[in-house]
Amino acid sequence: MKRLWGGAATAVVVLATVTGCKTDQIEGPSGPEGTGARGAALTALDSLEVKGRAPKTGYSRERFGSAWADTDSNSCDTRDDILKRDLKEVKFSGGTCKVVSGVLEHDPYSGKTVTYRRGRSQVDIDHVVALSDAWQKGAKYWDSSKRIALANDPLNLLAVDASTNRGKGDGDTASWVPPEKGYRCTYVAAQVAVKKKYDLWATSAEKSAMKKVLTGCPDQKLPTGGNPTKAPSRFRAR
Image (cartoon, rainbow, N blue to C red; front, side, top):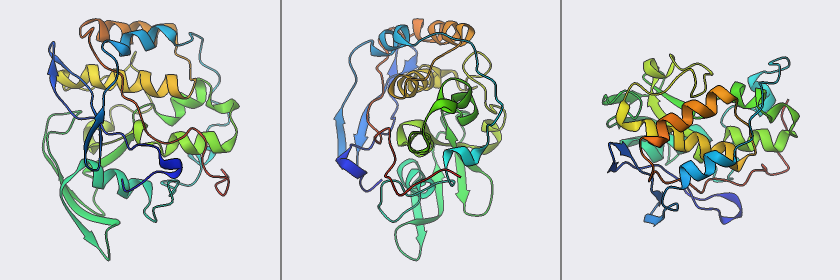
């Protein structure tokens, strides 16, 4: 992504093998900018509040604002920003925003290489913490600017194989983890990072499932960065 409002750093998860899982590195447009503390994912997990799910009543995608709002004011919508970040061999139409094709090399969820062409459904932009899950674990009580921020935060977004992602639905770690076993530590660490950043809680079953994954990679770092937790005031959820 080109820039973030308030000068915040852009976050992207890249992969490196650590204890059979993956570790995280924060990378900006010009390369690495820093990493989380050693073992920070497990430490952060311990800090998550445990509560039951709130009712799903009242949830809709629109409660998190218009899809792919340009919250970082770079004149490109969030979906295209993430495609530019995560795909290789990117080609554009009419400038440097609208991504029309690219290659998702080693999809993090399935391990496959997926070719993206605009208008087809080979690649999804997944909310790592699903918006419905967030709604039931704190977001229903937020103001609209915080929900819009979550929906468009690069820390919570990932380009993935569409067919694999459809199996996730709005599940949390207790009900779904990526089939690609080598990515599970990175995936769970990203969920922990988002929940900690936005003060979302976890259910007891979810937290236990997260701990089971992260115990297998105790040095897993915690992704950091992304956008502020409040969208600019011009954005309002419907």
